[in-house]
Image (cartoon, rainbow, N blue to C red; front, side, top):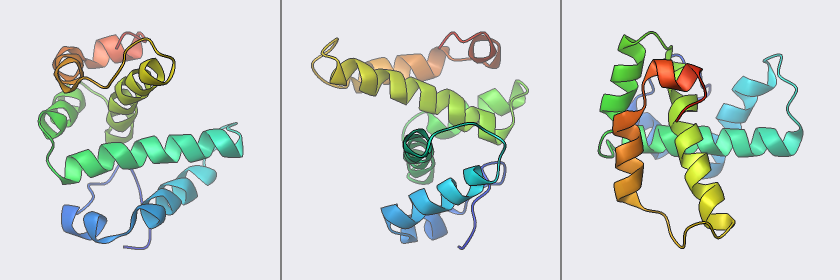
Length: 126
Protein backbone atom coordinates (compact mmCIF):
# COMPACT_ATOMS: atom_id res chain seq x y z
CA UNK A 1 0.00 0.00 0.00
CA UNK A 2 1.63 3.22 -1.12
CA UNK A 3 -1.27 5.71 -1.15
CA UNK A 4 -4.26 6.48 1.04
CA UNK A 5 -7.64 7.87 0.07
CA UNK A 6 -10.19 8.14 2.88
CA UNK A 7 -13.05 7.80 0.40
CA UNK A 8 -11.89 4.33 -0.60
CA UNK A 9 -12.14 1.24 1.57
CA UNK A 10 -8.82 0.22 3.04
CA UNK A 11 -7.99 -3.49 3.05
CA UNK A 12 -7.56 -4.28 6.76
CA UNK A 13 -4.69 -6.74 6.26
CA UNK A 14 -2.73 -4.28 4.11
CA UNK A 15 -3.40 -1.39 6.49
CA UNK A 16 -2.43 -3.29 9.62
CA UNK A 17 0.72 -4.64 7.94
CA UNK A 18 2.06 -1.06 7.78
CA UNK A 19 3.84 0.45 10.75
CA UNK A 20 2.11 3.34 12.49
CA UNK A 21 4.49 6.01 11.14
CA UNK A 22 3.84 4.89 7.57
CA UNK A 23 0.08 5.00 8.12
CA UNK A 24 0.32 8.55 9.45
CA UNK A 25 2.56 9.57 6.56
CA UNK A 26 0.12 8.17 3.97
CA UNK A 27 -2.80 10.05 5.54
CA UNK A 28 -0.67 13.20 5.81
CA UNK A 29 0.33 12.95 2.13
CA UNK A 30 -3.32 12.67 1.09
CA UNK A 31 -4.30 15.75 3.08
CA UNK A 32 -1.32 17.86 2.05
CA UNK A 33 -2.80 17.99 -1.46
CA UNK A 34 -6.14 19.35 -0.26
CA UNK A 35 -6.89 23.04 -0.04
CA UNK A 36 -7.06 23.23 3.75
CA UNK A 37 -5.34 25.82 5.83
CA UNK A 38 -3.95 23.56 8.53
CA UNK A 39 -0.63 24.23 10.17
CA UNK A 40 1.85 21.37 10.00
CA UNK A 41 1.19 20.56 13.68
CA UNK A 42 -2.58 20.53 13.12
CA UNK A 43 -2.15 18.35 10.04
CA UNK A 44 -0.04 15.90 12.05
CA UNK A 45 -2.75 15.61 14.71
CA UNK A 46 -5.46 15.36 12.04
CA UNK A 47 -3.54 12.56 10.31
CA UNK A 48 -3.06 10.71 13.60
CA UNK A 49 -6.79 10.84 14.36
CA UNK A 50 -7.53 9.46 10.88
CA UNK A 51 -5.15 6.60 11.61
CA UNK A 52 -6.84 5.86 14.94
CA UNK A 53 -10.21 5.54 13.20
CA UNK A 54 -8.80 3.47 10.32
CA UNK A 55 -7.05 1.21 12.85
CA UNK A 56 -10.27 0.70 14.77
CA UNK A 57 -12.11 -0.06 11.54
CA UNK A 58 -9.44 -2.52 10.38
CA UNK A 59 -9.50 -4.25 13.77
CA UNK A 60 -13.31 -4.26 13.75
CA UNK A 61 -13.55 -2.49 17.08
CA UNK A 62 -17.11 -2.71 18.40
CA UNK A 63 -19.53 -0.32 16.64
CA UNK A 64 -16.93 1.29 14.33
CA UNK A 65 -17.84 -0.60 11.13
CA UNK A 66 -21.54 -0.25 11.94
CA UNK A 67 -21.24 3.47 12.66
CA UNK A 68 -19.36 4.13 9.43
CA UNK A 69 -21.98 2.17 7.47
CA UNK A 70 -24.82 4.03 9.23
CA UNK A 71 -23.35 7.48 8.56
CA UNK A 72 -22.72 6.61 4.91
CA UNK A 73 -26.32 5.38 4.52
CA UNK A 74 -27.37 8.75 5.94
CA UNK A 75 -25.46 10.59 3.21
CA UNK A 76 -21.93 11.23 4.47
CA UNK A 77 -19.02 10.08 2.35
CA UNK A 78 -16.42 7.78 3.88
CA UNK A 79 -14.00 10.65 4.59
CA UNK A 80 -16.70 12.58 6.46
CA UNK A 81 -17.56 9.49 8.53
CA UNK A 82 -13.92 9.21 9.57
CA UNK A 83 -14.02 12.86 10.61
CA UNK A 84 -17.24 12.33 12.59
CA UNK A 85 -15.80 9.40 14.55
CA UNK A 86 -12.47 11.21 14.84
CA UNK A 87 -14.25 14.20 16.39
CA UNK A 88 -15.69 11.95 19.10
CA UNK A 89 -12.27 10.48 19.80
CA UNK A 90 -10.66 13.94 19.82
CA UNK A 91 -13.22 15.32 22.27
CA UNK A 92 -12.65 12.36 24.59
CA UNK A 93 -8.86 12.77 24.41
CA UNK A 94 -9.24 16.51 25.05
CA UNK A 95 -11.35 15.83 28.15
CA UNK A 96 -8.75 13.43 29.55
CA UNK A 97 -5.86 15.80 28.83
CA UNK A 98 -7.66 18.70 30.48
CA UNK A 99 -8.68 16.78 33.59
CA UNK A 100 -12.40 16.88 32.82
CA UNK A 101 -12.38 13.10 33.24
CA UNK A 102 -9.69 10.89 34.73
CA UNK A 103 -9.61 8.27 32.02
CA UNK A 104 -11.08 7.31 28.68
CA UNK A 105 -14.42 5.53 29.03
CA UNK A 106 -15.11 2.86 26.40
CA UNK A 107 -18.74 2.76 27.59
CA UNK A 108 -19.23 6.49 26.94
CA UNK A 109 -17.43 6.18 23.60
CA UNK A 110 -19.84 3.41 22.53
CA UNK A 111 -22.83 5.53 23.59
CA UNK A 112 -21.56 8.43 21.50
CA UNK A 113 -21.07 6.13 18.50
CA UNK A 114 -24.63 4.85 18.90
CA UNK A 115 -25.97 8.40 19.16
CA UNK A 116 -24.11 10.03 16.25
CA UNK A 117 -26.08 10.62 13.06
CA UNK A 118 -25.18 12.43 9.87
CA UNK A 119 -27.64 15.17 10.77
CA UNK A 120 -26.14 15.65 14.24
CA UNK A 121 -22.58 15.62 12.82
CA UNK A 122 -23.44 18.26 10.21
CA UNK A 123 -24.92 20.43 12.98
CA UNK A 124 -21.74 20.01 15.06
CA UNK A 125 -23.52 17.90 17.67
CA UNK A 126 -21.56 14.83 18.50
